[in-house]
Length: 258
Ligand code: DGL
Image (cartoon, rainbow, N blue to C red; front, side):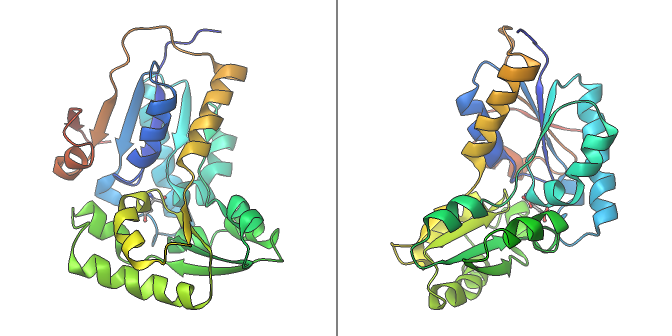
């Protein structure tokens, strides 16, 4: 099955590029369009209604650009809006949720930590999933302030280190052996997080799982691209400089209102 249309990927900002990278690595022949809604970031503190409205706006822009499949590269948007998106649009969606299952299933201490936004941790979808793991103690922590610091390009600031220490220290004391990164911005914090966590605590995120699921959907339902035009397109609706730097200046970024 062939389908040369692009895959659309969106996030509240630049963090979803961690998911985009996993997709691009697994499916290098696919054309991708990435939307960073940085003007409206962070989503994590917004109401469900606001998150649904912003997600629909992003989807409509991607559909105007003929996307054949849309990846919601944002845990907050997935856990608050994926049902509404699937109900309103025919295009297939892949969402991202905190990887509780592999952490809970592999934990030796039966204690795991989850760092995510308030919107994700308060969502019905997240809480339903968490309830399925009654034998595991889940230490939930809202990553207040982290997304904003990343969006502002302050990844390595003393303020970042201080916030991370305050969020992770109680988890270390509670004896977690897995830390789940439940926000697509947080993989960019792994070097700083590793400096705080003891070596035996494993860090997991959902990037590769999302890429595999995207590939399966292309295979089973949508079709792979055979076009040679596969240069990715990045759109951002605020200052492009942080997105350019997180992409290590490898790709052009277009500033556009959407
Ligand atoms: N990348 C989004 C997520 O995965 C960030 C949320 C936000 O904008 O607060 O949840």
